[in-house]
Structure formats: structure tokens, C-alpha cells
Image 1 (cartoon, rainbow, N blue to C red):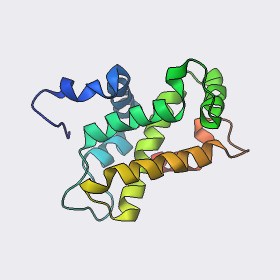
Image 2 (cartoon, rainbow, N blue to C red; image 1 turned 90 degrees about the horizontal axis):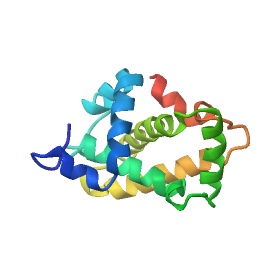
Image 3 (cartoon, helix red, strand yellow; image 1 turned 90 degrees about the vertical axis):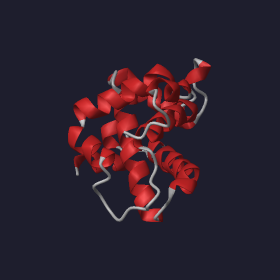
Length: 152
């Protein structure tokens, strides 16, 4: 699955327990998309790919930062919009995580990235999600344009 060592628990210190929950949610509710990413089925791939599980942990951490969730009361536009989603859908964070993972992989392929470019791809994924969260006609995670990537 792309762990950094023989003990996967050491990889979770950056994203915490929520990152494990995110991976499990993705596997349970979007199995086809999860399997496609896990096995890198789509597109022309670099020889040195991103490690799947570690990428997922980084995505969880990136979302918590982007949405300003550690502050208790988000002050960013993305965080404020996300709280609106959360008031209607208690699984909004998990669903957004799945969208973010699929979007990150799509950007990975579009940029023909290799392992050393992972942080750049993660930044562009964040930027794209922030743009989509700012759209006026988006009222839930399922309204995000990138949500369609989960359906493939």
C-alpha cells in the first residue's frame, strides 16, 4: 500500500488517526476509485510513483490545514464553506478527502509528475480545492466539479 517502513503505524504520526479513518472510508464507500488509485490503473505513470498510503496521510493533513480545522473556528473561506457542508452532511470531511485523493492523482498524471514533485502536486491540489470551494453554486461536497472524478 505504500508504507514507508515495516510498521505502518509510524506513518500515521503526521496525519493522526483521522488519516486512517479517511483511508478506510475511501475503501468502503468508493471501492472502485480506491482500487484504481491503489493499483495505479489510470494513465501513464512515472517509474518512481508516490506511495499510496503516505499520500493519503498527507492529504488528510493538508485538508485539516486548508480548512483551518485545528483552530476550533475556521477563518479561511474554505474552512467557513466547509462548515456549511458539514452542517448538512456529517461525512463531508471523508467525502472531501476522497475527492482530494482522486484530484491529486489526476493532477499527478496531468503534470507527469514523479515522486520528487509530490509536494508541488499536493499544493496544486489544495489550490484547486480552494477554488472549487469558493464557487457560488457549490453547496455540498457532491457539488464540487472534482467530485465527478470519483464516479469514473
